[in-house]
Image (cartoon, rainbow, N blue to C red; front, side):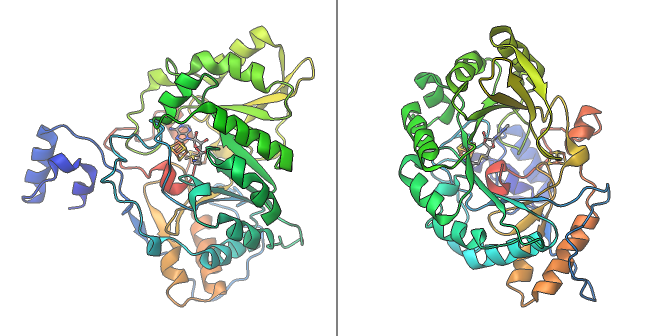
Length: 395
Ligand code: SAM
Ligand code: SF4
Ligand code: SF4
């Protein structure tokens, strides 16, 4: 029975499987995140087929972006992502040997690039906590698309150590950066990161990133109704005219630990309405196909904002993103509960051509479109459904 991974240590059962369920159910259930998510080793095709860079999935969507979670650890405990009650001192994060090495990551990234990926985003957990991340950035910056172009290489960070890392990241070859920031008000920000981290340090990190040229910088704000929605206007005011693009993300039902409730989601349409009432906005065209954010431009020329409406307006129809977990499992959707174990192939003596073939097969069979199905009430949104956690799969 794998269900013991689901229940809080206090309720850890000991009898036969069903009795274990019953006992656990009788006690307070706290879903525990665990890294032993279901996965299978993808089949390797009998004959090598060279990547064409034109791979399509079962719904005709190309493979364009790879998000890599370089660590499952984080120094913040944002309640919507890694709630303190679950990710506490006893929580066992992945041991170092489980993580893909920089050489393994670069090898697998090269195969994805051959299949058509031209954008790589490093994420986590907190990617700047991975030791010597600059070395990995340097290795990935060397990769070239089949057309001979450098990759769009970016990274999402909570900004906590950005002030002292910005220069080295730029020198290593990072093109640009996205910084998460949920509030300008110090008390609200400290409450949301739940480790009492001051907002000033993140703001200084943003300044440093801008100074060294890691732009255009994006700032991501997850909006939770009743928690930080009063920060929408102060944030908009602060970042207008700064050259940075503020993006509002609808609070999502990712993972199994954040206790998501629909009434805490503030629809993006309302965010746009609130901002437009103070600073008139015009809709702008998407910059690239598959872009997650809808763009809005300030009428007075003070820049733009973006809204990411993953809950109220699904954008699965052109989702071109694959995700690689910290331990090398390939996930085809943020809401997947099953990964494809590429590490087993990387460490199993398979050739590049064989692994590229396996990746190709997996992508060709992809038909995930969770958010669209959720919108049509067809997705299984039950709280008992085990889904992979965002810090592990990469946000
Ligand atoms: N630690 C880094 C950071 O916070 O930027 C990178 C990893 S984090 C998982 C990536 C992004 O996912 C962040 O912008 C974060 O705000 C967002 N995120 C995490 N949980 C979320 C949720 N439940 N709903 C919406 N966005 C979420
Ligand atoms: Fe850490 Fe980022 Fe998750 Fe916050 S959103 S807990 S900073 S990984
Ligand atoms: Fe892509 Fe899955 Fe999100 Fe849809 S729900 S946009 S398929 S990651």
